[in-house]
Image: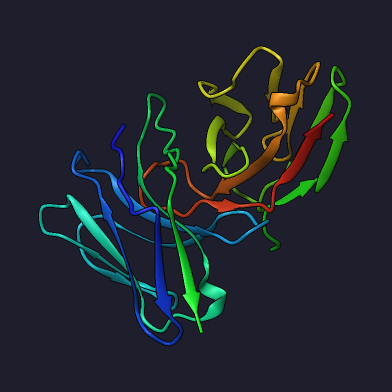
Length: 113
Length: 116
C-alpha cells in the first residue's frame, strides 16, 4: 500500500492561506490522493481528491506535482474553525477492489487569531 | 438524504460483555466500511461490504469482532467478550459506487466505546 508522510503539526494565522504538504513517493499510477479532516469528537470529513490534475472546490485546492510524488492542500483563507487534524491518504484498490482509505497520523493544523 | 448515522453514540460496557454497534449508511450507497480509531491515532480499517457481501475483513483484530449487513443496507458491528483494548471510536462510512478510485467516502460521527 502506498504510504504518505505529513508533518506532525502546523500553525497558521487566521485569514491567511494554510498550505499542508504531503509526500507519497510510492504512489501508483491509478491511485488517487484524498484529503480528509477530523475535528475533535467528529467523524472524518471529506475535503477533496485528485488523480493527476490540480483540483479546486468550495473548501480547498489540491496541487499535485507532475511526478505525483507529493501534493499540497491549500485552504485559501483559514478560519479558527479549520483547526483540525488533516489526513492525506492514497486510496488503494486492495485485493477485492475495496478502495479502502488507509489513514496515517495526519497533520494537526492550529489556526491562531 | 441524511448522512451516515451511527448508534449508540456512546456506549460503556463492562469487560466481558457483548456489544452491538449499528450503522445506517446513506440511502442507496453500495459500499460500507467500518473503522476503529483509538485515542490520538488515525482511523484503522476493519472491514468492507459491497451490498450484503463482506469482501474484505482483513482489519478485524480478532475473532471476537464480527460484522454483518444482511440486506445490503444497515450494518452491525458486534464485539464479543469485550476487553479494555477494544475501547475506541468505531466509525462507519459509505460510498455510492462499487469501483475504487474517484468516488467520495462519507463517514458517520462514530460510536464511542469504553470498556471498564
